Image (cartoon, rainbow, N blue to C red):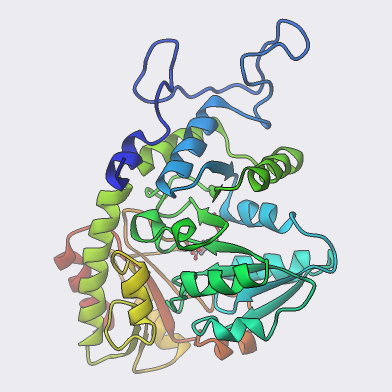
Length: 380
Ligand code: P1T
């Protein structure tokens, strides 16, 4: 099956053996009856497993070219489950520019439990090796990065991981499996904030992991059940519905993202535009190699170069909504320094380029003309 067909049919055969409904039923139940202890029809308690969630997990595995999908209550719950694979003293090498909540989870929760994190600019994969020692267990990659839109060569990092017997996990939230399939490029785990493009309609919070390896999957299912941060059947259904249009939504996100990026680049009040589709983006060649297109996320700074200036712009926008999150059909604008990345200390933020004047756009699938006109009036 090719990708577009998989978004609709992948893992969805016989989702309703009772009546043949085309969409899986929403099994809104906490538990399942047993004829004798252990005598059930495949499901016993909805934390351990639920048929609607199972249908979603099969779909997720299919669209990421993996074997096993594991769905969680949020993207951060999915990352939390990955980190629970490790023990105190283990070390993790992470992308230095990443979602502020991931950074907060690493440094303010898991460091207290004895994990050690190294934050590294991975645009040059050779930089990773300097941080590897006998305690290193995982390389955590986010690409494109949130919010600076750096792109990391997954295949090159996977060679470093394989050479040193390390796991490689890739946060594929910004790219989506339509644009980039990390498992095919050598990653062991692909993670999503399914809240974003996977769900696609800003109506749920969810996370997912997909792996190929059976043993790794067993451990992640164990953690999912033992820690309990699962997603409910209603949300599983919504995510499944979202996935069915992922390919066409992302195509339009990419078209509008490209139009917005070029408009901003040519605007006299805009200083710098961060979008990997530009030929002069420092990682353009990697993006061209590993992504089908360049996505709908665009960050920029204005020539005024101040927090006040950036705040004024996001407040003036009318079609773009000022809000956290991304990847929904509607366009959103955010101010990373005071919103999504406020949990990263200012000094650390500035080291990776997140200035107080940076604005991040999640370009939706509205009419291009309306989006450009909105940006024009706000910048004016
Ligand atoms: O919000 P949640 O579903 O828990 O996902 C966390 C997460 C993980 N990884 C990436 C790359 C993300 O962007 C996010 C969430 N990001 C936002 C809410 C945001 O506005 O950037």
